[in-house]
Length: 307
Image 1 (cartoon, rainbow, N blue to C red):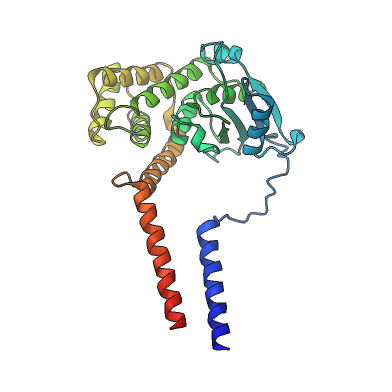
Image 2 (tube, one colour):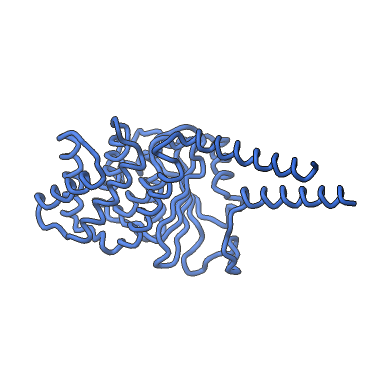
Protein backbone atom coordinates (compact mmCIF):
# COMPACT_ATOMS: atom_id res chain seq x y z
CA UNK A 1 0.00 0.00 0.00
CA UNK A 2 2.80 2.40 0.88
CA UNK A 3 4.52 1.60 -2.41
CA UNK A 4 1.27 2.41 -4.26
CA UNK A 5 0.96 5.73 -2.46
CA UNK A 6 4.57 6.61 -3.32
CA UNK A 7 4.04 5.71 -6.97
CA UNK A 8 0.90 7.84 -7.05
CA UNK A 9 2.76 10.78 -5.51
CA UNK A 10 5.52 10.46 -8.10
CA UNK A 11 3.01 10.35 -10.94
CA UNK A 12 1.17 13.43 -9.69
CA UNK A 13 4.44 15.30 -9.18
CA UNK A 14 5.73 14.56 -12.68
CA UNK A 15 2.41 15.44 -14.34
CA UNK A 16 2.23 18.65 -12.33
CA UNK A 17 5.77 19.67 -13.20
CA UNK A 18 5.29 18.88 -16.87
CA UNK A 19 2.12 20.95 -16.99
CA UNK A 20 3.85 23.82 -15.20
CA UNK A 21 6.71 23.84 -17.69
CA UNK A 22 4.82 23.36 -20.93
CA UNK A 23 1.49 25.10 -20.44
CA UNK A 24 1.30 28.89 -20.74
CA UNK A 25 -1.09 30.76 -18.49
CA UNK A 26 -3.95 32.69 -20.07
CA UNK A 27 -6.53 34.98 -18.47
CA UNK A 28 -10.01 33.58 -18.96
CA UNK A 29 -12.20 36.36 -20.25
CA UNK A 30 -14.93 34.37 -21.96
CA UNK A 31 -13.95 35.53 -25.45
CA UNK A 32 -14.15 33.13 -28.38
CA UNK A 33 -11.16 33.67 -30.67
CA UNK A 34 -13.09 32.06 -33.55
CA UNK A 35 -15.91 34.57 -33.41
CA UNK A 36 -16.06 37.41 -35.94
CA UNK A 37 -15.44 40.90 -34.61
CA UNK A 38 -18.26 42.86 -36.24
CA UNK A 39 -16.69 46.17 -35.21
CA UNK A 40 -13.11 45.67 -36.39
CA UNK A 41 -13.63 42.99 -39.02
CA UNK A 42 -12.02 39.63 -39.68
CA UNK A 43 -8.26 39.10 -39.71
CA UNK A 44 -6.44 39.84 -42.97
CA UNK A 45 -3.86 37.44 -44.38
CA UNK A 46 -1.41 38.63 -47.03
CA UNK A 47 0.67 36.00 -48.80
CA UNK A 48 4.02 36.55 -50.50
CA UNK A 49 3.52 36.52 -54.25
CA UNK A 50 6.39 34.10 -54.90
CA UNK A 51 4.87 31.28 -52.83
CA UNK A 52 4.04 28.05 -54.62
CA UNK A 53 0.69 26.40 -53.90
CA UNK A 54 2.38 23.96 -51.52
CA UNK A 55 4.23 26.78 -49.71
CA UNK A 56 1.03 28.82 -49.46
CA UNK A 57 -0.69 25.87 -47.83
CA UNK A 58 2.20 25.60 -45.37
CA UNK A 59 1.95 29.30 -44.53
CA UNK A 60 -1.82 29.03 -44.02
CA UNK A 61 -1.20 26.26 -41.49
CA UNK A 62 1.53 28.27 -39.75
CA UNK A 63 -0.79 31.28 -39.42
CA UNK A 64 -3.67 29.17 -38.17
CA UNK A 65 -5.93 29.80 -41.16
CA UNK A 66 -8.38 26.90 -41.17
CA UNK A 67 -11.40 28.60 -42.73
CA UNK A 68 -10.90 30.95 -45.68
CA UNK A 69 -14.30 32.52 -44.97
CA UNK A 70 -13.11 33.62 -41.52
CA UNK A 71 -10.34 35.82 -42.97
CA UNK A 72 -9.74 38.14 -45.90
CA UNK A 73 -6.88 36.98 -48.11
CA UNK A 74 -4.63 38.96 -50.44
CA UNK A 75 -1.35 38.42 -52.26
CA UNK A 76 1.48 40.95 -52.13
CA UNK A 77 3.31 41.45 -55.44
CA UNK A 78 6.35 43.24 -56.75
CA UNK A 79 4.02 46.01 -57.93
CA UNK A 80 2.93 46.47 -54.32
CA UNK A 81 6.57 46.79 -53.24
CA UNK A 82 7.00 49.57 -55.79
CA UNK A 83 3.69 51.20 -54.81
CA UNK A 84 4.09 51.26 -51.04
CA UNK A 85 7.83 51.67 -50.47
CA UNK A 86 9.28 52.50 -53.90
CA UNK A 87 11.03 49.15 -53.83
CA UNK A 88 12.08 46.65 -56.50
CA UNK A 89 9.07 45.45 -58.47
CA UNK A 90 10.93 42.24 -59.40
CA UNK A 91 11.55 41.26 -55.77
CA UNK A 92 10.87 37.66 -54.74
CA UNK A 93 8.36 37.67 -51.88
CA UNK A 94 7.95 34.83 -49.41
CA UNK A 95 7.24 36.56 -46.08
CA UNK A 96 3.53 36.55 -45.28
CA UNK A 97 1.50 38.13 -42.50
CA UNK A 98 -1.79 37.87 -40.66
CA UNK A 99 -3.12 41.12 -39.22
CA UNK A 100 -5.86 41.28 -36.60
CA UNK A 101 -6.97 44.78 -35.70
CA UNK A 102 -7.53 45.31 -31.96
CA UNK A 103 -9.43 47.78 -29.80
CA UNK A 104 -7.84 51.20 -29.28
CA UNK A 105 -5.26 51.10 -26.53
CA UNK A 106 -4.56 47.38 -26.95
CA UNK A 107 -1.07 48.04 -28.29
CA UNK A 108 0.96 46.38 -31.01
CA UNK A 109 1.74 42.68 -30.64
CA UNK A 110 4.12 40.96 -33.07
CA UNK A 111 4.53 37.20 -33.31
CA UNK A 112 6.98 35.57 -35.72
CA UNK A 113 5.47 32.09 -35.96
CA UNK A 114 8.29 30.66 -38.08
CA UNK A 115 11.18 32.19 -36.16
CA UNK A 116 13.81 29.92 -37.74
CA UNK A 117 12.89 31.20 -41.20
CA UNK A 118 12.90 34.96 -40.48
CA UNK A 119 16.62 35.44 -40.19
CA UNK A 120 17.25 39.18 -39.82
CA UNK A 121 14.12 40.97 -38.55
CA UNK A 122 13.03 40.46 -34.95
CA UNK A 123 9.63 41.08 -33.39
CA UNK A 124 10.96 44.28 -31.84
CA UNK A 125 12.30 45.50 -35.19
CA UNK A 126 8.92 44.89 -36.81
CA UNK A 127 7.17 46.68 -33.95
CA UNK A 128 9.45 49.72 -34.15
CA UNK A 129 9.08 49.98 -37.93
CA UNK A 130 5.30 49.58 -37.82
CA UNK A 131 5.00 52.31 -35.19
CA UNK A 132 7.01 54.54 -37.51
CA UNK A 133 4.61 53.68 -40.36
CA UNK A 134 1.61 54.54 -38.18
CA UNK A 135 0.35 51.04 -37.34
CA UNK A 136 -1.12 50.78 -33.84
CA UNK A 137 -3.38 48.45 -31.88
CA UNK A 138 -3.02 45.23 -33.84
CA UNK A 139 -1.79 41.68 -33.54
CA UNK A 140 0.58 40.84 -36.38
CA UNK A 141 1.80 37.32 -37.13
CA UNK A 142 4.61 36.74 -39.64
CA UNK A 143 5.53 33.50 -41.39
CA UNK A 144 7.66 32.17 -44.22
CA UNK A 145 8.13 28.59 -45.49
CA UNK A 146 11.77 29.27 -46.41
CA UNK A 147 14.63 31.21 -44.84
CA UNK A 148 14.32 34.92 -45.70
CA UNK A 149 15.42 38.19 -44.15
CA UNK A 150 11.80 39.13 -43.37
CA UNK A 151 11.79 42.62 -44.87
CA UNK A 152 8.96 42.07 -47.36
CA UNK A 153 6.39 41.29 -44.66
CA UNK A 154 6.07 45.04 -44.08
CA UNK A 155 4.71 45.58 -47.59
CA UNK A 156 2.05 42.94 -47.02
CA UNK A 157 0.99 44.65 -43.80
CA UNK A 158 0.71 48.00 -45.59
CA UNK A 159 -1.41 46.39 -48.31
CA UNK A 160 -3.71 44.90 -45.68
CA UNK A 161 -4.41 48.30 -44.16
CA UNK A 162 -4.94 49.82 -47.59
CA UNK A 163 -7.39 47.06 -48.50
CA UNK A 164 -9.36 47.84 -45.35
CA UNK A 165 -9.73 51.49 -46.29
CA UNK A 166 -7.13 52.62 -43.74
CA UNK A 167 -4.29 53.72 -46.00
CA UNK A 168 -1.05 54.64 -44.28
CA UNK A 169 1.06 57.66 -45.20
CA UNK A 170 3.39 56.70 -48.08
CA UNK A 171 6.35 58.70 -46.77
CA UNK A 172 6.03 57.06 -43.37
CA UNK A 173 5.85 53.61 -44.97
CA UNK A 174 9.00 54.32 -46.97
CA UNK A 175 10.74 55.63 -43.86
CA UNK A 176 9.72 52.55 -41.87
CA UNK A 177 11.22 50.36 -44.59
CA UNK A 178 14.40 52.44 -44.44
CA UNK A 179 14.45 52.07 -40.66
CA UNK A 180 14.22 48.30 -40.98
CA UNK A 181 17.17 48.34 -43.37
CA UNK A 182 19.23 50.47 -41.01
CA UNK A 183 18.59 48.33 -37.92
CA UNK A 184 19.25 45.02 -39.67
CA UNK A 185 22.51 46.42 -41.06
CA UNK A 186 23.59 47.73 -37.65
CA UNK A 187 22.77 44.42 -35.98
CA UNK A 188 25.45 42.77 -38.11
CA UNK A 189 28.17 45.14 -36.87
CA UNK A 190 30.85 43.87 -34.52
CA UNK A 191 29.83 44.23 -30.88
CA UNK A 192 26.15 44.66 -31.70
CA UNK A 193 23.19 42.32 -31.93
CA UNK A 194 19.47 42.53 -32.69
CA UNK A 195 18.44 43.23 -29.09
CA UNK A 196 20.98 46.02 -28.58
CA UNK A 197 20.00 47.76 -31.82
CA UNK A 198 16.26 47.42 -31.14
CA UNK A 199 16.80 48.86 -27.67
CA UNK A 200 18.78 51.78 -29.09
CA UNK A 201 16.09 52.65 -31.66
CA UNK A 202 13.36 52.46 -29.03
CA UNK A 203 15.26 54.67 -26.58
CA UNK A 204 15.93 57.28 -29.26
CA UNK A 205 12.23 57.39 -30.13
CA UNK A 206 11.30 57.77 -26.46
CA UNK A 207 13.82 60.61 -26.06
CA UNK A 208 12.42 62.33 -29.15
CA UNK A 209 8.91 62.01 -27.71
CA UNK A 210 10.06 63.59 -24.44
CA UNK A 211 12.32 66.33 -25.84
CA UNK A 212 10.56 67.23 -29.12
CA UNK A 213 13.74 68.35 -30.92
CA UNK A 214 13.37 71.38 -33.18
CA UNK A 215 16.63 71.12 -35.14
CA UNK A 216 18.87 68.50 -36.69
CA UNK A 217 21.55 69.35 -34.13
CA UNK A 218 19.16 68.46 -31.33
CA UNK A 219 18.33 65.17 -33.03
CA UNK A 220 22.05 64.46 -33.36
CA UNK A 221 22.52 65.16 -29.65
CA UNK A 222 19.70 62.76 -28.73
CA UNK A 223 21.29 60.03 -30.84
CA UNK A 224 24.67 60.60 -29.21
CA UNK A 225 23.18 60.69 -25.72
CA UNK A 226 21.44 57.35 -26.21
CA UNK A 227 24.57 55.77 -27.67
CA UNK A 228 26.48 56.88 -24.59
CA UNK A 229 23.71 55.78 -22.24
CA UNK A 230 23.65 52.28 -23.73
CA UNK A 231 27.46 52.16 -24.10
CA UNK A 232 27.25 51.54 -27.84
CA UNK A 233 30.11 52.60 -30.09
CA UNK A 234 29.41 53.36 -33.76
CA UNK A 235 31.51 54.68 -36.58
CA UNK A 236 30.99 58.25 -37.70
CA UNK A 237 29.22 56.99 -40.82
CA UNK A 238 26.80 54.85 -38.78
CA UNK A 239 26.09 57.68 -36.34
CA UNK A 240 25.32 59.94 -39.27
CA UNK A 241 23.05 57.28 -40.77
CA UNK A 242 21.05 57.15 -37.53
CA UNK A 243 20.89 60.92 -37.26
CA UNK A 244 19.67 61.23 -40.84
CA UNK A 245 17.01 58.59 -40.22
CA UNK A 246 15.58 60.34 -37.18
CA UNK A 247 15.88 63.75 -38.81
CA UNK A 248 13.56 62.42 -41.53
CA UNK A 249 11.14 61.35 -38.82
CA UNK A 250 11.28 64.85 -37.35
CA UNK A 251 10.60 66.36 -40.78
CA UNK A 252 7.51 64.16 -41.10
CA UNK A 253 6.29 65.30 -37.67
CA UNK A 254 5.88 61.74 -36.44
CA UNK A 255 4.34 62.03 -32.99
CA UNK A 256 6.07 59.35 -30.93
CA UNK A 257 4.54 60.84 -27.80
CA UNK A 258 1.23 59.45 -29.06
CA UNK A 259 2.59 55.90 -28.87
CA UNK A 260 4.80 56.43 -25.84
CA UNK A 261 3.07 53.65 -23.88
CA UNK A 262 3.71 51.22 -26.71
CA UNK A 263 7.35 52.28 -26.78
CA UNK A 264 7.56 51.62 -23.04
CA UNK A 265 6.06 48.17 -23.63
CA UNK A 266 8.61 47.59 -26.37
CA UNK A 267 11.44 48.56 -24.03
CA UNK A 268 10.23 45.99 -21.50
CA UNK A 269 9.93 43.32 -24.19
CA UNK A 270 13.47 43.94 -25.42
CA UNK A 271 14.87 43.83 -21.87
CA UNK A 272 12.97 40.63 -21.10
CA UNK A 273 14.25 38.98 -24.26
CA UNK A 274 17.81 40.00 -23.46
CA UNK A 275 17.43 38.58 -19.95
CA UNK A 276 15.92 35.36 -21.31
CA UNK A 277 18.69 34.93 -23.85
CA UNK A 278 21.32 35.68 -21.21
CA UNK A 279 23.36 38.04 -23.33
CA UNK A 280 26.09 37.92 -20.69
CA UNK A 281 26.42 34.14 -21.06
CA UNK A 282 25.66 31.36 -23.52
CA UNK A 283 21.91 30.85 -23.80
CA UNK A 284 22.12 27.15 -24.59
CA UNK A 285 24.59 26.62 -21.77
CA UNK A 286 22.08 28.16 -19.37
CA UNK A 287 19.27 26.06 -20.79
CA UNK A 288 21.37 22.90 -20.50
CA UNK A 289 22.31 23.69 -16.91
CA UNK A 290 18.67 24.27 -16.02
CA UNK A 291 17.49 20.91 -17.32
CA UNK A 292 20.51 19.13 -15.84
CA UNK A 293 19.67 20.54 -12.41
CA UNK A 294 15.96 19.87 -12.92
CA UNK A 295 16.37 16.17 -13.71
CA UNK A 296 18.97 15.80 -10.96
CA UNK A 297 16.37 17.19 -8.54
CA UNK A 298 13.76 14.70 -9.78
CA UNK A 299 16.28 11.86 -9.49
CA UNK A 300 17.13 12.80 -5.92
CA UNK A 301 13.46 13.03 -5.04
CA UNK A 302 12.66 9.59 -6.49
CA UNK A 303 15.65 8.08 -4.74
CA UNK A 304 14.43 9.48 -1.45
CA UNK A 305 10.96 8.03 -1.95
CA UNK A 306 12.09 4.49 -2.57
CA UNK A 307 15.00 4.27 -0.15
